[in-house]
Amino acid sequence: MELIIGSHVSYKSDTQLLGSVKEALKYGENTFMFYTGAPQNTRRGVIDDGLTYQAYQLMKENGMKLENIIVHAPYIVNLCNDEKFDFSVNFLKNEMERCEELGMTKLVLHPGSSVGLERNHAISNIIKGLNIILSNQYQVTICLETMAGKGTEVGRNFEELKFIIDHVEYKDRIGVCLDTCHIHDAGYDLNDFDHVLEEFDRVIGLNYLKVIHVNDSKNIRGSHKDRHENIGFGEIGFDNLMKVIYHDKLDGIPKILETPYIDKEYPPYKEEIEMIKSKKFNEKLVDEIRRKYQ
Picture 1 (cartoon, rainbow, N blue to C red):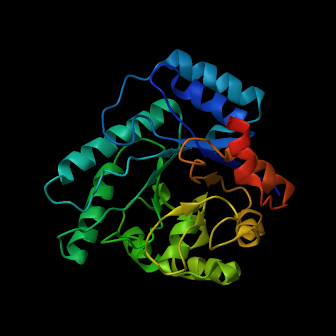
Picture 2 (picture 1 turned 180 degrees about the vertical axis):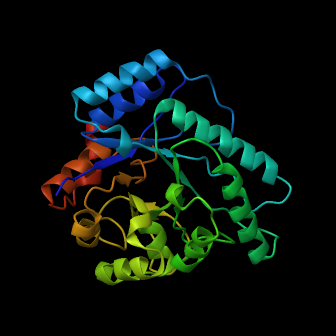
């Protein structure tokens, strides 16, 4: 089995994709995920083709495959919203263009939150927006993320995502990003991941599964809170997450860590990935990272 493992890394205006690749390599990764600009806003700078070319060369030298790299759309974009619908659609159309310019083929998107809208109307907006956004020539797949069901989030179960996919015209460019913390918080039991995967296949279809976000959870199952925890230190547990990462039906699918920084300051990814590769849980990992940065 080929382990395709990485984490969410930075994308800075001065180093762009090259800086992202260097950060991922520092953590021992063979893939990664990034925003193409600041996640808290929709301002985007000009892409430097020279830096992109250098990033490609570095990726090639280290065995990274371009098709395994993931872009994440900022959380503040909400296709459900009536008033900001046109803005969200136009931003995501531009983000698709940026993905194409960078050579990226997968864009992860939170479906949105209905807030004060009737839920069916909000979901209808998502479908309408996706059909507008995907009506282009770009070879980029939008991967709808499974959500924890916090507040009025859409995508809190497989059936909601299935409904959206069924009504998207461009089936060849729509997919799903499965987040382990989110589905646990939504109520799915990862103690029996085989059953969860069978349900996903029955409802949506494994052919739509393009990305896995590997996160433990601070919360009990079904809490609908969406609070990520470091690998093995949460309610899902190391053994269950290893079953996800090394599941034979998920071979070839990129696995991305979005676990929290230790003390909100120190990245844990190098140590977590070493732990995943060795298949041995290190209960002292957090303390070791703290000592490393002292």
